[in-house]
Image (tube, rainbow, N blue to C red; front, top):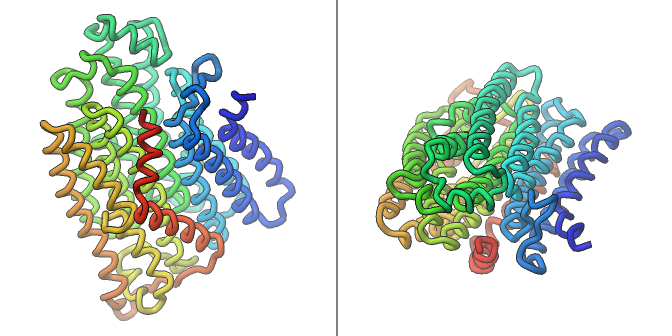
Length: 489
């Protein structure tokens, strides 16, 4: 019975996905499926959050023969992915119906993709990790190309599918090489084998590099990011919100387990020849390239796509800090993932609310003057942008503060990363505030297209939930950080 309770968040989502396929056959109004999906994921997230707070009876429950670790880290990330999935489902309930692309299969895809993300977060075996990764990715591919009449959506889906397939093959090949070196696929057994002197084996080094590449692709780290802007821009905006929050959170959980657990020995985590210098290089490239590219965008949605990549760079600072400081670095990562999931889902939801069918908010010019014409619509969008920029007292401010603090605490070259992160955040402030300037201080040019806000209770509900979370986390960051510290142990 203990195992069933421990698996309950995953079981709720898995059973909900199966029932949702049946419900689609009998549903008269498919927007009802959005509410049901959101409730299902919300229940899963609440169960996970409760288990994360209470903790498993003995700290960790190994399930499915040790292939899943049902510990506080798993439950924290499961709560984040459940929250991101629920908000994406509510956004889909308004967006898909408004644009005439609502089909029932979107919601089972979202549920099963979230289930894959939850499995990925819990995986302690390379085989389970790959199964979770592909389950999550298959749903994301389909949601990206869901707008069948849009060439951009089809292009984004094909790019995502092809490049992600190559990345999955690279990851799988790295796992095969690691199995050849250690004779194990379990992360704990791999760590023990590498710690006994096999970490210096050339095949182990190659395997580590391939695994880092595969995981870096999933989080959108530069230079493995080329799929992300096109996929994020072409996908229906709720699917973009899902990829930016859920997929990213699960992939970072996998990085924590693979890099800090399986490759935590002194040789693999060497500051000279291990994975930290590789990840540090990826972090610097991601922060610089993503922020500079975001500045140059004329599409607001594409700007948010590049800003999502920049936020991956901030989380990687936390990952490197965790290599030096342990639980404080990991806790900063987890706190950031929660704050970012709520903020980015709200930002994409705000963009959805600003436009309607035939009069979408795509470019900066489309948003010109909307703050004066429709202040109630522009305000939530502006609020979430300020959170992403790290303006106090929002959740985004404390997320960046904890990540940078962990980096400074780690000392050495991590201080340089913290400085680069702070400067990159200043660049991010420019392109976020640019949206506010257009919304509140510009008027549309004569004869230019003007975005017309949509009306949807689902989108408003998603924005309300996200806003409450961003405000609560920003006002009371201490309790959330304590739960993150508990999960990080």
